[in-house]
Length: 100
Image (cartoon, rainbow, N blue to C red; front, side):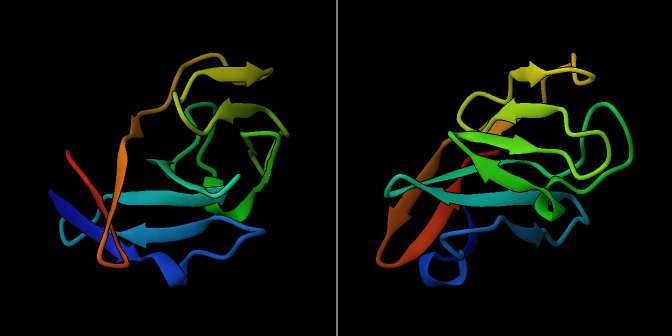
């Protein structure tokens, strides 16, 4: 398991961008008392999803307002059509962990 961040680091109202040691960027979300994680890069363009906003379990890309499901990475609104990778998040002792 790979540590992302402390659970308290993730704001309730916006995504948190986390860059791993290998340079891979992820977006971490707090929504409905749960934590979610996806790749940070939008599959439609070179946008950081952590700069977007979460609504009803979807992350909206800041460039063209397409969206993805934060739990599955599936595209939900055009122009996004290619899924992004979603990771299962485990909370342990106040830390958020994923398996890559």
